[in-house]
Length: 283
Ligand SMILES: Nc1ncnc2c1ncn2[C@@H]1O[C@H](COP(=O)(O)OP(=O)(O)OP(=O)(O)O)[C@@H](O)[C@H]1O
Ligand SMILES: O=P(O)(O)OC[C@H]1O[C@H](OP(=O)(O)OP(=O)(O)O)[C@H](O)[C@@H]1O
Ligand SMILES: [Mg+2]
Figure (cartoon, rainbow, N blue to C red):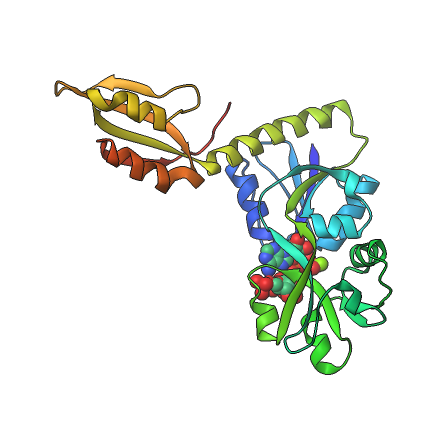
């Protein structure tokens, strides 16, 4: 049995649970139960505050954890990271009141900056030779300038609406973050094997999410042009249609290329294009 710590409730919770479920792992969850066992995989899930997860994994109380890189690096434990998970992407940024003058980070010399990330921000400012007074607060950081606590802040930004809503302007990106899988460094051989199985499943799920299955009909004369647009995993599957001079083509395309490629496929004569989600993709 391997023990995985995830955030109990917050920005990481839903995506962490979805990833585990998409790996085909079933478990019961309820808002008051802080520990649950999977029914079809040797996994126990602990629901914790995200700030506590790196320490628990470092100490081996949990074998694995899912946490934001920002929290991991702030805790001084970046070596625990084993894999990026591609969700909860955000950045840690410096921001100042919209009307405040700001040319470069040197303008923060001697200023008061409110943040929940004194370690990451401290290192960033030190590298740039800037000395500032950091005020560590644990939340609602964006309020600090308007109540006279600080002249600048450093906090998580995603859409930027919290900054906008509080009259602030983003001036520097200090750190880019996403959710990561972390692991205790000394695991038994049995646990390592379970981890390998879990990573194999997670990678299959993530690869599937990035790709789409595409089916289309094309005139045989256009096949070379269609093939050139659809490299597929190895090469596209081509089967003749009942109608003479037509083929059906099946392949896999990257989500990012999807609109661009389907437009080009139509232009070379493809018809009846179907695009389907892929559930798992194993290379
Ligand atoms: N707006 C956002 N968009 C995307 N990811 C975010 C956003 N805000 C935070 N995150 C990421 O999600 C993580 C958890 O954020 P959340 O706000 O839920 O933390 P928290 O309030 O500290 O939770 P906890 O109660 O567990 O301590 C952050 O450390 C960061 O990596
Ligand atoms: O750029 P935005 O899209 O506005 O997101 C940024 C906000 O999201 C996070 O807070 P969250 O909403 O998770 O609340 P919290 O302070 O309770 O953690 C973060 O601390 C910012 O305040
Ligand atoms: Mg927290």
